[in-house]
Image 1 (cartoon, helix red, strand yellow):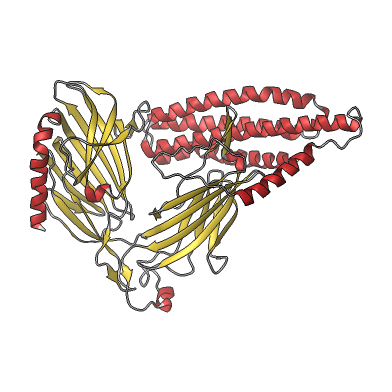
Image 2 (image 1 turned 60 degrees about the horizontal axis):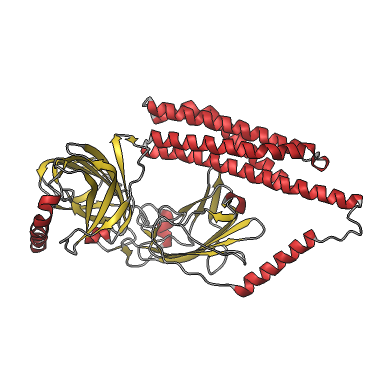
Length: 572
């Protein structure tokens, strides 16, 4: 082990010194704070770097190196310019990050380049916040345990942040899931308290400083890994999106050895099954319906569903507790209203739907997403925030039959079975067809309004996560503009329906829905303004909740009333 560390140090000193002595000496990190969260099977790191340009030329990028063992397990990486604690610049948002290839780099490091929103001039400084998530970065140690043993996990990293720049002052805090630690590397300025292990501060560290540390600790968290997840998203002609998800799951933690005693487990599950996980929770869209959970044997009844206006939570339990090394396969399925995810613009249809897994505690090793589109779809393109392999296949038989049936229905609905086109019944039918078309357009506008509402709520959740007040205000401004445009689209439809005799029976519900949606808008805007104002005044989380509690109750009630009215109008 000592020999390997020595070789690594030599690699850093001689492999990089010549190239970076001129390029990277211009930048200095005056202060660096790093946090590593080990409270789940995912390793989440947050690094705040105050960067200063001491050179003569402006700098447009900052380089981030990762050792090979980290780079191959890197699942997420983002960077943004920060104004300080709980404040981020809304104008910049997440900065562009690309894989970099600096000259003379060895194969042991993977480099990323962060493009700055504007060049950092001589004498200038900025604070960069870098977030990264790693999978498979924790190793069960020992790798095999008995049913009664607790799971111990080993984590390896460096007490010093690996950087091509000189670091004047830096510190590291490691957050653990439990206060119980078997061992950890003790260095100068090391302190362990509660569930936090702190290294530093360390001063005046040269580029590529690297001091290995190992933390050996207790973790009861599940290591649920989907070795393969196949998601099939089927778009129906009849206004529904059917989601089917097939999971091949394994508990990738310490493998259980010896015999399994269900009696011991049922008697003391938290002692004789501490390393097992018993359930998983999937966060589905708010209007998910027709939910099922089954495996090869059949339907599994051990599941629960909770829903509100923002989400639907599905809790599932496997047929048996999942210990380390154990595997299971299952399928969950659910339907979604197509109108919530399908949008039209410039004659094209866009499906905007989640790409990944709805279970936040599951690591996905291999994800396959299949989109089944109606026959006749063309000019198909996909937009995802990361590179993927794509292919298109035809399903001629099934889709062709569906398409024929669909066409037959269209022909039947538009066929003229009357003898005379001047007859009262024919004219009445034309008027009713016009009313139906207007009602469909009205429903579309209402649903688009609800999407804007959801985006407003999402901006508040993002504000809670990042503290980015400016981004939240920008979301509010965009929402105001969209709702104003939708209001303009709505006026001629309402005028037509009010003047149309066939619409006399449905107009009370239409007008009630318009009134409820406008009241919902007002309450949402009030909540949004209150929360943003509270953040600007540095109010605490509990104080903010108390300030919006009453209006939130009204919002929940109004949203349910709007949903109910939409269903009533849809049935009419």
